[in-house]
Length: 314
Length: 206
Image 1 (cartoon, rainbow over the protein chains, first blue to last red):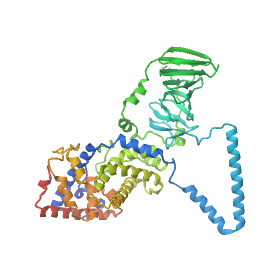
Image 2 (image 1 turned 180 degrees about the vertical axis):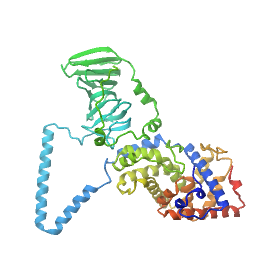
Image 3 (image 1 turned 90 degrees about the vertical axis):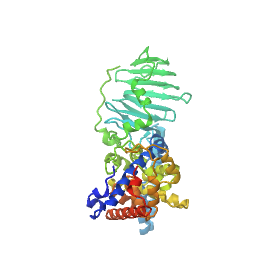
C-alpha cells in the first residue's frame, strides 16, 4: 500500500510543510484508486510467462557480453599514443602485430590438427536452475567444455544442440562435449531428443548411449551406468569391450565394465522429470527465479562444490 | 504481493531485487535479466500502458526497456538505483514513441484502456472489486490533464505506478526535495479543479 505523503518522513518527501486535510483526502482516494487500477490492469492482461518467453528469445540473440566495450577502447588508445610519437613506433607495432597474428594462426592450426575442442564452440543454453550449490554459467550459454553441477535438491534444465532437451537431476555432474554429445560424470540426466535429427550421444565412464530420437534416463554412480528407455530406441556401446547392443522402448540396461545386463524398465519418466514438466512456465519462474540459490559465477561456486555421494537408490 | 509479478512488494512500493541478481546482471547474466524482468516488468509494462495508451506498444517497449538495460548495463552507476534506472529508460522510450506518433502522453490510460479496465474486475482489495460502477478514473484523468506535465508524471508514478518518492525523483531526474513540494502543489490544484466542477471526494469513492 502506498504511504500517504503526510505520513512520510520530512526527509523523504523533502519538505516539512504539512498537507491540508482536503489534499490528504484526495491522496487517500488516489492511493485506493491506483491500487484498484493496478489490479484491473493485471487482470486485463496478466503479466508473466508469455512476456518472459519473448524476452528470453530476444536475449538469446544478444551477444553474451556485448555492451561493455572496455577492451576495444584500450586497444584504440594504445594505437593512438604510438601514432603521436614517431614513425619508428608504428613500424615496431606493425611488426609486433604481424608476429602475434602469425602465432595465433599457428596455434589455431595446431589445435585443429590435434582435435582439441575449442571452448568457443557454442553448444546450448541453460533455461532453469535451482538448488543451493547449483553451478551454471553466468549467462546460461553452454560451450564445449562447460561443466554443470548440482547438489542435493538441485536441478538444471538445458538444451544441447538444436534437438536435445536435458534435465540434470540432483547431486549430478555433466560436461558439455559439444552440440551432439554430453558426458555424465555422476548422478542422473534425463534426455529427450527429437527423432530424425542425427546422432546425439550421452557418454559415461561405462558406456556411450547413441540416441536416434527418443526419451531416456542415464544414471551413473561410479560403479555402473543405468539406462532407462521410455520411447524410441537406443544403441549402447560399452566402453570396456566396445560391444554394442540395442535397447527398445520400455527396456533398461545396466553396464558395468564389459558386462551389459538387460532388465525391466520403468516405462515412464522418473517422478522428478514429471514434476518439472507438469509445472507451468510461470510456476517454474516463481519457484526458481526469486530464490537466490543459483550461483551464477562458475569460478566462485566451484570451490564450494563437493563431489556427490554415490547414488544407492538404484 | 504485487499482482501479476509474483514478487514480494514492499509497503512503500519498492521493487526488491537482491544484490546477487544485480551483480549477475552487471556480469551479463541473461538469467539475472529474466529475474529482474519477472520482478519489475509488470510495473514497467503498466507504466508504459498508462503513458502511451496502447497495451501492445507498452508490451513491446517494456521488452525493449530490458534489452537496452542489458546492453547498457555498464552505465548503471548505483546498484540501488536499478529500478529507477529501468523506469527512466522506459519513460524515455515511451516519450520517444509518442513523439514519433506526434501524440501527447496519456499519463492515465487512453479511452480504450479505460474501457478495458471497466470490463475487468480488479484483484485489489477494496469495497468495490470492479471499476465499472463508478467513473473515478475518468474524473481523475480529466482533473489530471489540467496540471503541469511534471505534476501529472509525479502523481502517476507515485500513486498509480506505486513507486516510492525517491524512485519517482530518480526516474524523472529531479531532486528528491522537489518531488514532495511538486506533488503537494499538484494535489492542491487537483482538489481545486474537482471543487470547481462540483465534485467532492465522496463522488470519487465507490
